[in-house]
Length: 265
Image 1 (spheres, rainbow, N blue to C red):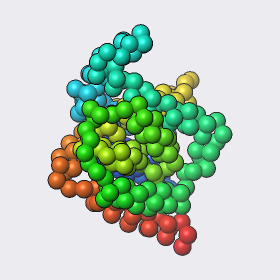
Image 2 (cartoon, rainbow, N blue to C red):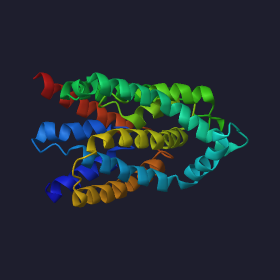
Image 3 (cartoon, rainbow, N blue to C red):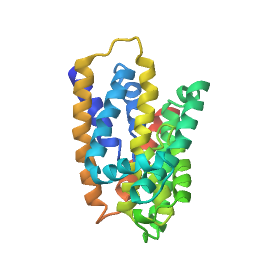
Image 4 (cartoon, one colour):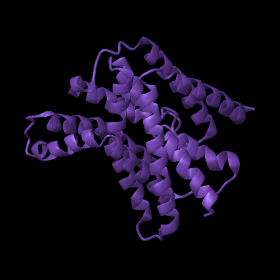
């Protein structure tokens, strides 16, 4: 695959994975609107691994806390913040794994990969994010995260399997509705992305068994997507201390309308 194509995929994935604008939607649109070759499963997995490294590095303290709680959680003991955070992340991941398996087995996931679907979800869920952002109480931090919150946010996250929805955007929407501040809503969404990315990457990797993996292409995409995701994460988290999610909403609405125009006109 040409290096330019690899760089483009890595930048799109890295920049959009954690912004509330849908990375999967952008990657589906790339070959659909430009005529470029579909990148294939191996490149998709590499891009997700790169962004996984980025979020784990950026939120390394929270990740270390959750990992430290895994042994206690496996023993059925919840004695500290580590075990509690690990439990909340596990609970929030279960709905998306189950729903993802259903979509893959039934083949519905392939049917949803269309410009029209992405246009509607980009527009609709962008407006839902704006509604939640404008009405958010913004009184809670992640220390108040409950099991009920985890279940509800897990259900929100499940909806993100529809291309164009944005996994981070829909979880941020749910967290804002639950009263979390903007930075804390984004932080929760990023942490919940870790087990979800691991699960989706493992599922996608099953398609690679017995096939050839282009090592050079995979390495380029993995490194560049990690660097791009780190930059996008740092910028977004800094901006959220001063501005709302409105700029992302405007982008989603404009892109959604353009895509609907392309799909129907």
